[in-house]
Image 1 (cartoon, rainbow, N blue to C red):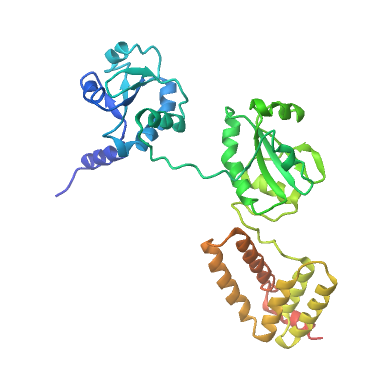
Image 2 (cartoon, rainbow, N blue to C red):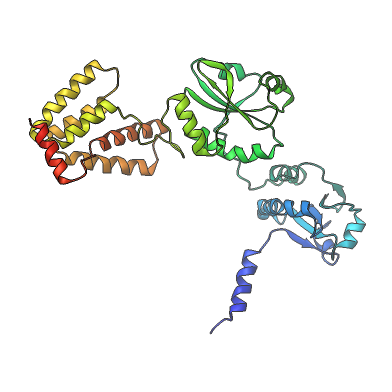
Length: 373
């Protein structure tokens, strides 16, 4: 049996537009309100811009209490359409107006915040029903205030990027998720801190004046050796911040977290690694000895380069490919602690220094002949 396209389309539209917000009219209002369970009711008008802005949040609120429809009602009334008599009855003079009705139908105007958390907290307080909203993860960003600012920012062992923000600032809200990602990327770096302060909070306003914060967000970098703070004037993408902090802090983090592909690499040992790789097997011991001599006189940590050379000398260069595959598989799972993942990434980076061959077979042959001279 074939279903028409119109029927199938209507079915999918119905599924997509399914809502946990109860639509109330004068005909069904008394079936839901004042019948033994409380209700939060939004009186709206279809043309109202504020109502349109609230709509997605109100849908989320209804979803958050969908598990308790037998205990609390989240509803709405088109008070400029079919529900106009209800708007008049409950003295609705502007849109959107939210009213709380207790189990007996007695109403009171809701006058708190219209974000999801505020609405959900109100419903829970009034009804005793908990929402199914999962608490947000703890912030990656270090939160500053007047009490800990000097302890963290003025620490001469730390470089600190500070965003001075205000809760009501739209640009600050847009920056927040990007800034959190940057903070996550630099979390393993004890000397490179990504921090934020609510500079509009009354207790922090002296700090805002001290650092001449005239607009939000203002971002300043306090290096380990300059605690006056310099204005950050770069781009505000995650990549922009990561590049800036790597340059200022001497770190090698990458966008999204973890170390970049240059972490742990040492130019002088990269040169020896390529020379080692290009050499015939019988000549690699000499390059290995050269690397050990250099490591002894160098303050740089070359232990991973030496380990690769030792393994290849005692076995074959197949060790490099096998180890890259093994470590790559572990890194893909991301199941280890960040510090361990950083250690493995450094090993992978150094292994790759040995797999950089000359461009063609002729150059490979020349390089190996030169190494045997």
